[in-house]
Length: 395
Image (cartoon, rainbow, N blue to C red; front, side):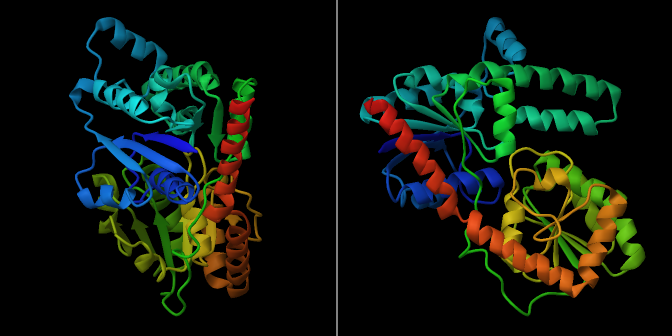
């Protein structure tokens, strides 16, 4: 099949959940399909060259300030519908030119932000890869917010986003989500939509363990630190949970690994034994020397690749229920679940001090990702979606 993939997220470097997913979709599907990729322009030419290894064509577009709508009517429409991305003339032009140039069998767009462009390819099957659902994130931000005025604003935003999703998502021929939980949420709002689950995966060859490098009493958290749910998780953990751990293990160390940390995260490095690394080309260099992965998320949607990567590297994982949501994990067999600061701290100490428990989690986690979450296994489900759409087109 010849497939046009449109993404507002440049897939390289693969240093966040969205980029990792999009890059691996491109990399794996290029083995069986002719891909044309439309993405925002990137300042690094070598990044575009890397993508051209997998795509027949890579079209980049500069998204300038003209993205912003000028008319009062359009601004009002955007406010009322809570459109997460306002149409760009540059992107419209690129889409039209690509549709004239190629005979596509299918269009895939990454995230609902691109829904305003759906009319341009209404004659083709359109797949929406909705790898995290915005209304879920807004709802969880709402539940965590304490400021009354901010709470009201978040409530209004949640209602708008939820309404926009309910109106627009059914327009797609097929919707892809990352978990059965996300599928249930979409179907409860719009029972008529056709939803398939294509989980997030992990590169088992890249994320593999290296023995003999671990330092004692070391925790780590990975993720794009410009992402608000990650910021919230680390600030809350350091304030509410870490003091309980220090009562039992005074020399505990915490590595916060990820690019674009805001000042409030950078300031955590002033606390003894907290290390904010910022962006690292190869996170494995730090992860390999740590003992335990923590995922104390309170706000999230989709599924967390950080958990799969840690399991692939034979690191035990302690997560909140929200952090592990959507993954087919088994508590106490391949993951530890804790939702209060006290319980999270207690279980973290248990894993650090109990070698038998640690080994059970390590073996169970690696087995889980090998059998269910390699990218090869996950993207077979995407291939099945394409096959069904191809057969529908023939009929």
